[in-house]
Amino acid sequence: MADSDARTVSVWLPNDILAELDAYAAAEERSRSWVIVKAIKRFLREERDRREQDTQTEEESHPRPGR
Image (cartoon, rainbow, N blue to C red):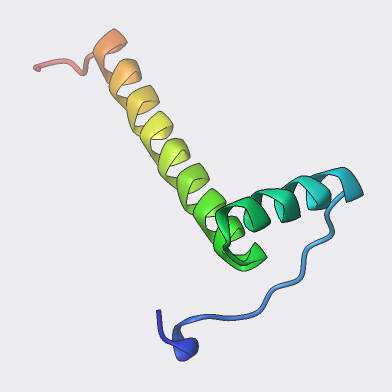
């Protein structure tokens, strides 16, 4: 990702979450930003998949007439 493809955002984190984040980043030899981006991507993918599954389940349990 090129620098022009990113923006800086600020977020407040509880101290215990920040400590765990920093420990994970250090263990992986990655930056805090890298870990956060990875976590957000995973969250968004899982939520998208969950919504798609919910929609599919809803459609299967309430089929439209004529289908």
